[in-house]
Structures are given as structure tokens and as C-alpha cells.
Length: 371
Image (cartoon, rainbow, N blue to C red; front, side, top):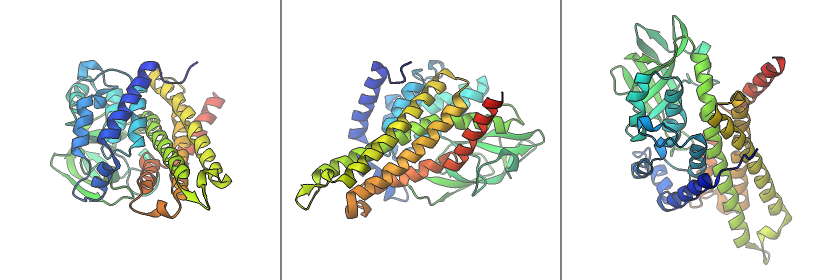
């Protein structure tokens, strides 16, 4: 079995890299980082919409390209390399996947064309504050078809048009679709380690909503959404880790110390080798996850958790070692190392931290072995 990209997928990946190298330089990312009034780069977002990436995995009947999830994984990897300051992850990895998987036919027809056009940006509002997300302990409540409660942090909640909200009802925990322009919705942007991927506190006061999927099955539905998103996040993290390795290697081959390039010193060689090994192991796990996602395989829960754990560890390690390889320069604002360190930490927490995913993997393996 070949887990590598096909020739067509490699071509897509190469073209995506060329496009992003020209349109998403570090200056673009820093433009968002340095401007509190600019939560994302709208020009880059529109360019990516025009390229059709927002509809890569969305069926043609809804205006998408219908390419498939492996192609979307290839795009995600390239977006991760450039620390793209756009809400692609929230809108596509999470919201679009959720709508395609659990929404009704009418909801798909109403939402997916807008997602493809970039007009609808969705977010996932499940967290009630610090600690793991739990469907059974969520504080938001559904009363007479309206939601009341607070969710934070909500990634891209300050710019999203719609939210998928986890709330309790008489039937049990469920997922509900909320138009954030409706009455009863208030949002407040909050500070994060990585301002290029913004977040907000969303407050709902009898806000109108509609069920997404079967009411009372919020825990199972949310778990499935997170599994699908985890694979795509893993590819973005692998792309970031790979870029950190390239940055560290390039600097090590150019920087001289005591009359020789620092790449010739054993300590630097070991750093680069360790970065390479961790990144390639994460890539292998991510390829397995891509296969499981594209084929909707029964192994998706385990594959997604394994990819998520490996990719989070690889990106965090590569980002830190990239700073260390650059030495004193690596800690400065002018050098781009901190852009990846910020994004690595932010992505690691976006769907629940590594301990959460390790627990999910162990629990799923135990259930599979007991069957």
C-alpha cells in the first residue's frame, strides 16, 4: 500500500507552495501580528478563495471542486509552512467538515456554497474555559430553541459568521448552528499567544439556533468532527515542522563560528537529525490519517489521534530547536522563528491539548482490543 501523494497531488502541492511563497511571505503574517485591528489578511483569504482551495473537498453540487480529502491535506501542509494568517482551519477543517458530515440536506445547500465563496466563516464553540471539553459538563443551555451561555476561547470567533455550539437540552448534549449576526449574540476578542489566529469569547443570551445533527448526540457528533479535523490540523503542523527544519538547516549552513559553519558541529547535527526524525514520523502518521479520512475507514479515530499526537510533538520540538539553532538571533523579533513557535503552541491546543488526545487514543485502543 502506497501512503505517499499521487503525481497529481504532488503537482497540486508544488503549485500551492509556489503560490504561497509569492502571496504569503512573512511580511504578510507580520502585518496581521502587528495590527490589532487586522485579525486576518483579507487579501490572502480572497486569493485563496479564488484559487478554489476553500472548496477542495466540498462536492461539486455545492460549488466545490470535489477533489477529495487527500488533496485538502496537501493544501493544509503548505498553509502550515507559511503560518498563513487566515481562518482556513476553522472554516474548512472544522466547520465545512462538520456540515458535510452531519448537517441536513437543506443546511448543506444553505451553507456550503457560502463556505466555498469565502462568505461564510464558521467556528467551533465548545469550550467553557480552561480544561478539557466535555459534552456532559457544558454550561450552555437550550431553552425553547434558543441558546444561553458563554464559550471561550473560540478560535476565529471574532470574525466568524456562524458557530457550531455545544449546549445541553432536555434530550442531552447537542450541537447547534448559530448565525452570529443574530440577536442575543455578543463577542469579545481575547488575547492569545498567536494573534495571527485570533480568538474570542462568545456570549449567547437566548440566541436563536437550529440543531446540527441528531439532538442529544452531541458527544458522539463532536468526537467525529474532532477526528476529521485532527488529521487536517496534523498536516498543517507537519508543514510547519518541515519549514522549521529548513530554516534551521539554512541558517546552520550560513552561520560561521570559530572559523567554520555551525552545521559542522556535532551538537547542531544532532538537533537537525532529531527534527528530521520527529517530522518524518509525524508525516507517516498523518499519511495514515489522510487515508482513513479519505476512505472514511473504521480506523479513523485511532489514526486521527495518532496523527494529532505525533504532529503536535513534532511541530513544538522543531519550533523550539529552530530557535535554539539560530542562537541569540532566534529570540529576536526580527527573525521569523517566533512565528512558528507561536503557531505551534496555538495549534497544539486548538482541538484539545496533547494529553487529551493521548487519552482518546488509549481509550480507543482499549475498546478495540476488548471487542
